Image (cartoon, rainbow, N blue to C red; front, side, top):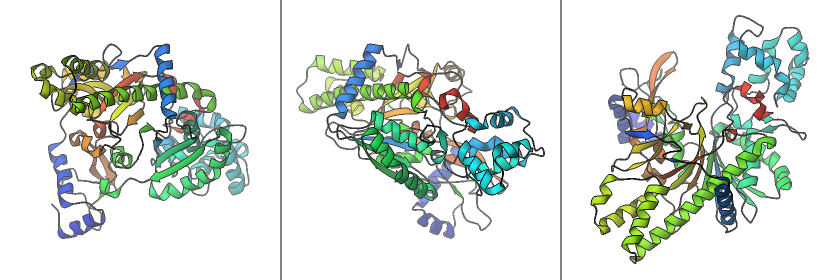
Amino acid sequence: MLIANDLIQLKTKNLTQEQVEEQLNYFIQGFPFLEIKASASIEKGIVKLSENEQDDYIGAWEDFLCDNNTVVKFVPASGAASRMFKDLFSFLSAEYDTPATAFEKKFFDSIELFAFYKELNGKCLENEGKDIATLMKAGDYKTVVSNLLDDKGLRYGSLPKGLLLFHEYPEGARAAMEEHLVEGALYAAGSDKNVNIHFTVSPEHQPLFERLAGEKIPFYEAKFGVKYHLSFSVQQSNTDTVAVDLANAPFRDVKGKLVFRPGGHGALIRNLNDIDADVVFIKNIDNVVPDSFKGETIRYKKVIAGALVSLQKRIFEYVRLIESGDYTHEQIEDMIYFLQDDLCIKNPDTKYLEDVELVLYIKRKLMRPLRVCGMVRNEGEPGGGPFITVSPDGAYQLQILESSQIDMSNEDSKKAFEKGSHFNPVDLVCALKDAHGNKYNLPDFVDKNTGFISQKSKDGRNLKALELPGLWNGAMSDWNTVFVEVPIETFNPVKTVNDLIRPQHQ
């Protein structure tokens, strides 16, 4: 299926022939579905904390910050904002000129509420000699939209979400990236007042992020009394995946070259692996709110971080006890109960193991990256869900799954999916080092069989694309995982431009 010129192309992308052939094989064979025991719930698998427990965990987190540990806030920010404006792009190409759909009418009726209104008004005056109100009064709505989306205006149709103005303040509007700077100062600043934030960006946009950071950081450092340390990375080209046609043959462009596509956010496990930190927060670029709504977000970030470091402390104690060799049968039982009750790991076969085998099993389960994930009550928002699944070694453990990983033809699996009470808002805090301070090699804990295939098009031709195991799905499949319920108020993503006029973004 591959020809000599393909091998030259692979070399430029730092990909091997074996890697590409493995990808091509996935298109033919597909991916196995995961075996599900049940959807996770408050009754089984999701921890609901009392107010006193929350306060204890907040205290544990604040103590951790005082001990010179390294904390990083990791923000996937490479996604373009074009999907936010899908409805407005449709309006530009529509045969009618005045708002007709509910979405279009809401956008124009509320246009003064958008944080970018003042900048957009300025662009309209600069390019058209008329302000927004005058253009709308004359029925020239499409000119307003083109000044928002096109290169002659604010370029919002091609910029990444992180650079768009999301919220208005007396001192001026803030971009989504700025809200992450503020969050970092409020829950991730150590006793030295350093705030470490890492953004994954696309190469063409990195200079724009760096420029915005250079303009804004002095203000936020003075406002919060902190010192920011920002870093950036791009998705590595050797995480791109080959595309195929509908017959599963390599898809080629008009010049006969193989077509590759980004492997999805699961590719960012490599970027995360390059981070040298004790604890890493992961949160999407668009899930931010203005300061007036930040209270719950900050509180629960500290809560889940406190839960993480408290669990990690016990894990480290057990690992050191095992390595000392000086433990009792009762202590082994304590470890098993810890696995079952705190980490939600149960294996029916452990009762058949001798003490030595059991201890090795326990150590193997403890010596893994750890994450605590916030879970929100399901109110119809999109997102992966929390499940109890069966691991390759037969153990039951917690996983975040997308619908594509679930066999909907299996009645029990379908019921488990439909009855799910919670979903994943991508609210994670992770511990990436072992009891001796050594970094785990995160690619070692990826389940390669959890990718998925989607249909796309290029140049008017249909193709099939391969997505790598998702960052918080298959890429973290073999991690220790704990689910904690967090309130819906902590989840406020911006999927369409009109989401910015929700009360939570005003």
